[in-house]
Length: 115
Length: 115
Image (cartoon, rainbow over all chains, first blue to last red; front, side, top):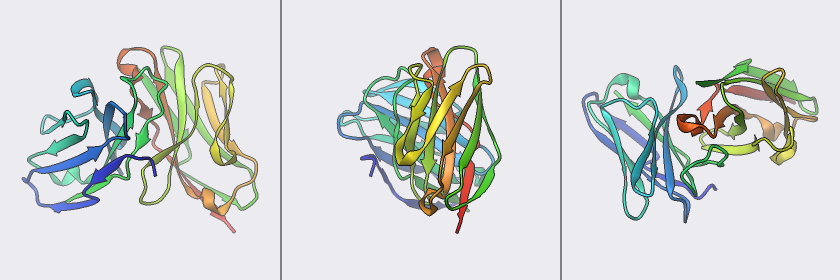
């Protein structure tokens, strides 16, 4: 158990809908990272938050957004969903802002299926 | 820019045989290198990481990897495979430089251990 929790575990929805994925980092960790894992794109970094502020952006679509709340949990919002958004979404956490050497602790993921 | 190439999307070994999973990296700055393992229906777990100290890195579960700058490689090995090693393995690269602090993952290698 990494100490990172994600809810829900599974989510099935329809095209055009909006969903929210939730992540709680390990106790004391200030950074949260979101990743998308799909068969065709592999594991891709989406976005990082540190202590409530956006820190880095990767291959995140404009239809996707995230935020980190004062209690440090984070939410990833996916809107206008398309079939291709079906994937496993992971969050990970580290203690600091990231200096490149950090070990990222991953949650168990949320499997999103868009029908 | 940085990238990782994992040679062989599927590797099969017999129980007790040597495990060798290949990873080559590309980075314009000194890299930090990681191996993560993903068991079915779970998140990623760190096996080991290279952060510019010793070039031979020992990790959990008997795995180790050697950083070879001349070959731009960071191959993962284990002398004797166990059935419990069956999983997907990901090599990743980051660095201390700007956006490259974020992890860039390879496409993964699925390891099958045959009885």
